[in-house]
Length: 383
Image (cartoon, rainbow, N blue to C red; front, side):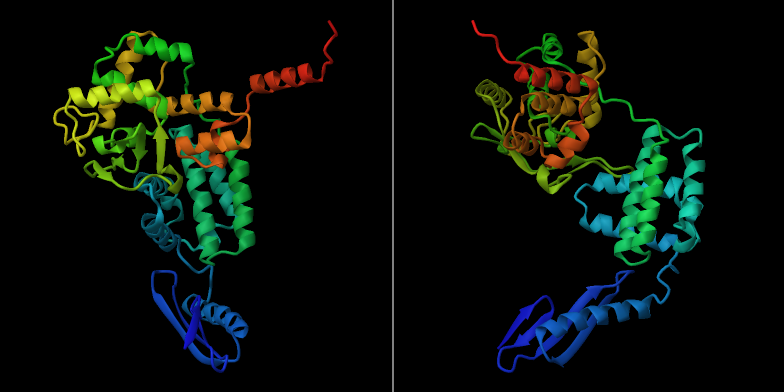
């Protein structure tokens, strides 16, 4: 009888250990390590790590002697196999292939990721005309992720990775900040709905959008069976990829994106009446253009959104702005850590994303906080 733990088996009779371990080496090759008769499990664990390092050294004796092209291919393959957001992987692929690969193609990693050469490339890239601020920020994010991947594969040392990450962060400060995502207040939201027929599909679609604060890909993939007991279950999304037909997939952007969102009683009743009027079945899409078995496209959703906010003479807003609007509302309401985590779960975020992306404090927030703090410190006068 043997007891197995992480590729190491222990014989319960004599206490000896057997190493029987498979792992994927760079390039996708599966390596098998086997050794029996090890004195103990503790020694087997130490020996296993040494044997892995030796095998890696045999495969790649010069760790930096790897072409950037090979690293790029392995990185994209890994992202496609493990990342939930297919469209995000495609963005990584196109952005790096267009802006970084032509510069680094045919060169070894020790040449590409030398901090001095890396810094020189960054300066010329940031000063380049004809490339938008958003694209430059995406390239910066993609290369930081690529550096981390190279370090994990032991193609570059941890120190080289840190040095280049510092270069990327320092150079990114020279990029002009992204434009602020437009958001609306409660009055503007109500003004938006005054021009929409309450009995129409558009009214319910945008009501759900502003209530859920979900991504358009999640909203447009909703079916009748996702409306359960006064809640909306978000478990799938529309994927639109360059050069491919749009599809529905049961994979969301992150693991925290799978969620169940409660509805208000009014919105729940409105949705039930809508499903009855349009005879929405369990597998029918809630929002469609021609047939109920085909979802509405993101382009059509954006077109209708623009038509109504222009008719109401409101400031420009996009689907991402709807999500930011909901996050902004939650930010004003939350007072405790538990409330913040509940708001994050409703939006399908981690608390860290809400803090770093949606929860950044402005000068007005600081002023409001300090004024409230001063009011609490000021002793009240007796009547």
